[in-house]
Image (cartoon, rainbow, N blue to C red; front, side, top):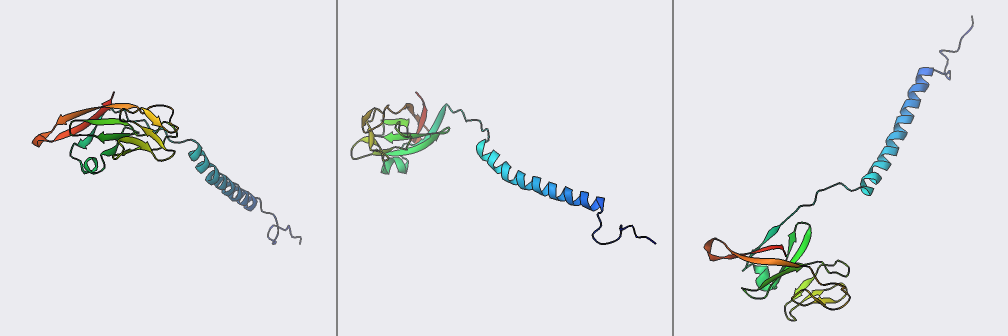
Length: 160
């Protein structure tokens, strides 16, 4: 009687070999996908349509931030805008992004100027660059004071 070796340990079973090859191949593909997918997502950011905004309500004229600090940073679509209150009748708005290295600016009440802390850039209250490295003036925005219910006025900022 001769043994064919089919049932002996160590004999090669084609089905078992194909199954192991399939498991090893699919796990290698899963590993590759788990490495490549996050890198691909990082390299290609999602497409998000930018909001188109014509005007934004910046709050009431007696907003606590405007009263205490004299200014307030608001969002105009995806752009930050600084709203500066000089008096109840004089409110101005400019792009809050410094034209030097895109830092956010602030209003210095004591010196009556708009200042960038990053590199010492300064702008006057017309948005013109007066000191430091900023190469261009700030972009101005139009400000309207709109009467609301109860006699309060709201600040509405729109593109100039």
